[in-house]
Image (cartoon, rainbow, N blue to C red; front, side):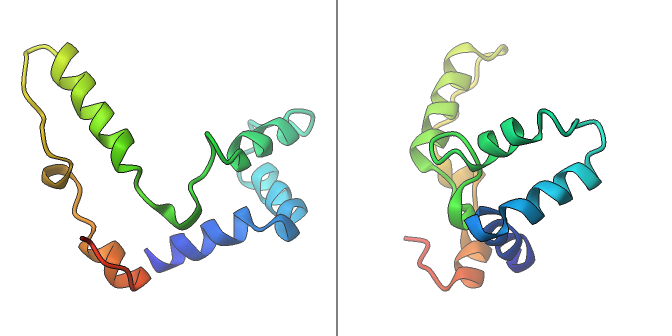
Length: 99
């Protein structure tokens, strides 16, 4: 997890933009150079892209559970984010609190 978070921070650092795009093109050959800037823009978009620190959006999780409860078949009530997400390891790695 620490490696993922370090890689995420590196990717989101604007000074690494060119190197990150080069890696994207090298590791994902289906992405063509002409569209790579648009892919990078989506990945780096603060509203919809990668999440700094890898944090889980608890409000977003609650929305997902609410929608699944409402529309999934067979019906099933999904009520508690904590039931589906255990942040203990994340807290250990980042030195944050789970409460």
